[in-house]
Length: 503
Image (cartoon, rainbow, N blue to C red; front, side, top):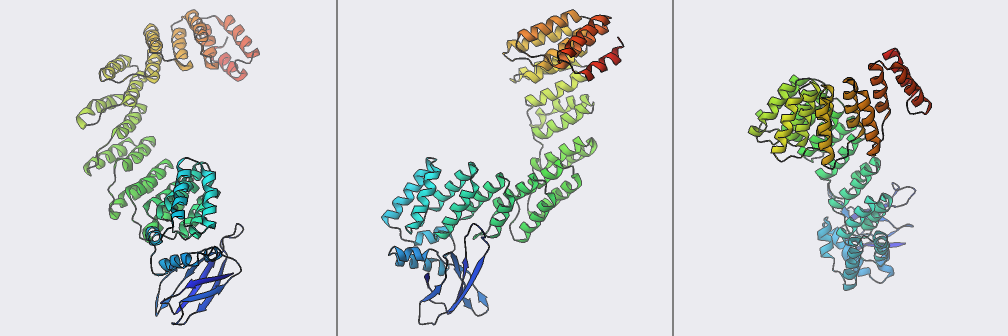
């Protein structure tokens, strides 16, 4: 085919033809040509249409200008002037999609076609929108970038990234220049479907400069894929290419490194943030505190809490919940209660999970009276207890032998319209068996079944051990054999009971 490229004001040039083929998108054909100062066009011959560029030379200085493709389409439908006008738009130095599009004088038909495309995408008619887009481009129309971006987003949400990729190719080949948002949407689509390779390839061939959102999207995917070394290299490349990282950028990496237990590297990243004009926030410190607590380095965690405050970053409720959980697990419940009591003065209001954490800690160390006081406190502050709150108290009271109190809380839970789970029932049955009230425990099992809660293997094992504990070894063994024959209790579990209780 013949492609006529306006070459006004340029004395030298060559075109790079980029062949879009499904089999090999990286193949390129170079075509060189010379024009005299008298002519204003350069005629090139190529056997295959594709995207092309014109690179004029000015002494030692080179400028890359992207020419509008599909000149053959404009020629075939009698709109050669339409095509040459858009070519001049790009060749004269305009690189933004908005300017190139605004300089293009749209016909009323093209305006209406773009409005129809927008309506199709807005109504979620993605397949129809895709077909209409193809028809538009075949007629020589330049599609609306915003509508195409929405189409790409919709296709990506449905997992059709291959079709979203085709929309991008159509958009680029039509003469419109996608903006960074369009690229970001497609890159995000690739990342969500695990196509990190496609995302990186698109990043390399973007016709506009990527922004921090572009890099953050890919960085997060590299981290989620466990490629922390690639993630660190990617951050370094981002900085080298002049894109300033944001707090979100560093937080993505810190969070990932902490999840992997690479606390030292996470601290290094945290400490380097001010060098790039970023001030760490609570989302920067919280993963680090959580990792230190998980690693049972409580002193170091409290040290970083102090550092956090000294740097003007005040902990949020997530920070405190992390510390309270770690303190309770470590048996330092009194310290946890003290911190809980100070939250109000620190401008941080406790939430349901905050109280549940400390109530659980108190219940596990036999301080259910203090746990009940906290329950009353949270009710007074307008916080509604949930099944976790009551199940925790029921378990704690049962372990302390306060079974009747546990049953009272159990019925409070039912009155709230909350259906107790097997764990809650098992806690009460265990308490009854320990109090040598196995008959009541059996009745409670019957109540459990009547209320539509299916007993677990643990439910039956509690009763068997309860019978044995009360000296009813024969009855316990008979029940055990019956349950084993029915497949309700595993043989391995039964053997453990036999050894433990020596029937």
